[in-house]
Image (cartoon, rainbow over all chains, first blue to last red; front, side, top):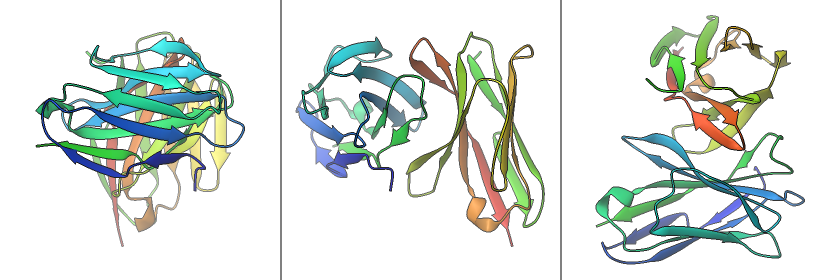
Length: 112
Length: 107
């Protein structure tokens, strides 16, 4: 058990819809990372937050947004969903940016 | 060309064999992660290293900064080691992932 909790585990929705993925980091960790893993692209870094502030941005689409709340949990919002957004979305956390990351079990998003 | 490359892409082994997975990177990194992803999808961080060598049980990771190369070794491999192994370079707070090596160990 990594201590990182992601909900929901599975999400099935339709094109054009909006969903919110939630992540609770390991106790004490200040950094939260979001990753997307699709069959054709592999794992890709989306965005990092550190203690409530955006720290680094990767290949995150404009339709996607994220935030980290004062209690350090984070949410990834995906809107105007397309078939190509179907993927596993992982959240990870670490104490700082230079520590091993602990991964959640992921949210499997399926767009029909 | 990917900034982080792994080889081989697929690897099969008999139980007990010594396994080596290689990772080369072309970008500047401050550290390199080795991750293990099981068939169910869960990802476990195995190592994070910026120099030298680290060992945990039957797993050994090494990195050569000058040659921009890292290796993951598994000694006395076991079927439970079957998984995808992914290396990732830490580049200014962003992890850049390799495409993974799928390892299958047969009894």
